[in-house]
Image 1: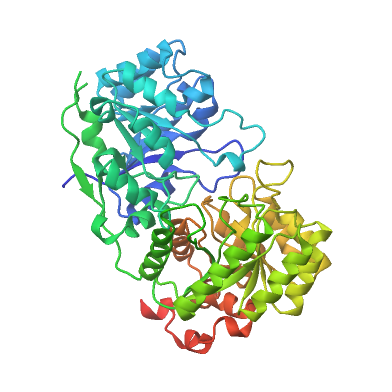
Image 2 (image 1 turned 90 degrees about the vertical axis):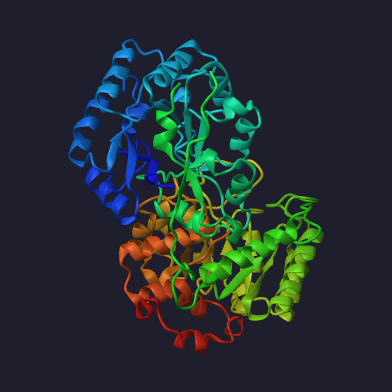
Length: 260
Length: 303
């Protein structure tokens, strides 16, 4: 077990619905080192809400460049946006380990050709496709934030249709994860990872339950920075029952590199 | 195309227990279950709370049972019979666990006579506080008799609070800081613990309201772990009006303690949040070993 400890769920930049304190790469790089992580996969948060995320990707590459030793860019691609293939090529040239997409923000499901094409292209390029479920609890959202959570069905459909893709889901809870995982074949299951940022710990022990039923190979480390405290998933791992500690999670770099 | 074997696993290091650091730690927002909650795993969940509490270093769980947890009546609108059932189970748990657990008395203020009778039974059973859910908005006059009882018996009131209340949400009559402040202004001697700092996301009006309600404390529990939440809470009301709790996501409770470490709270202020404020606002019988708590090494001293 010699892989690098990666936080797959980080971003820089502001959030449209509330102030976020210093969401800057300099701060994130410091947090990564403080928390004993080796690196973070980092997206551009404002791009999640833009029709054309390519200017955000340019900003992401530029701002992460001085921190390339710990922050790896995860650009955003809008499925079906004209020229998305060029954006994928640019991601490849920038050695991005993955790209992000927000199907719920552009109104497409897992069966939509544009999303399937993006997923297959990511798989062919050796990059994972990262799909955030949510930024905030539904009960906490601004009235302007109406896109809703990413449906579990979107990921099930995508895993079934895009045979080369490796999917990493961010911010899913236990029931959501189980709805996807147990709705897939074993081969499809192996092409999906879930970060632990939104999985409850004790006393409900959802993380312990998922480690027992899905196994650590299907789960990876993510925090939700800059929106959420980085300490929560670490605390969750530390409070696992004795027989599950120390926790072992998937090596996301190896997962993303796996041939499609 | 089949995928290759699963990617290799990576071990995650952890710090040794007690993970919340040395020194007393009072959790003012715990919950337990009982055999009539409709959950076959109710005992396992109780054990999990105590197990995690021991690993974290929790000295005392101040806790409640919310009726039948939705099994026979809604979680946030428990029937009088379920309220009684849950409170009885909670008092029994205190008897079993000794000083490790303390009980709130849950009431549904829509049933005033029953609520007052439950509170009286709670006082006779050693209750240390009143727990209100989302059965009635906190600014409603129906809460006045409950508040008056709490003041008379020096019981703090832990009140669920969530989001900016500009509309109704399903299955609850949720209150926010504005509602709780209205109650606080009508009952200026009542100590109110505003749960979850209001939640997360759409909660930030909480700070402006809390500044002007001196007996309102912000309780830290909950799944909302927004960055900046703790910093702004400290700025708004100071450490003497923050009080630590975990609720049903104990990992976020632990994370917030670790975040307070990163903020660099002075040892005396950290001790206040961890346990000192609880000793101050709960009745004297709540923590009979408070003197020994005070004598315990602080987290700073134990480093």
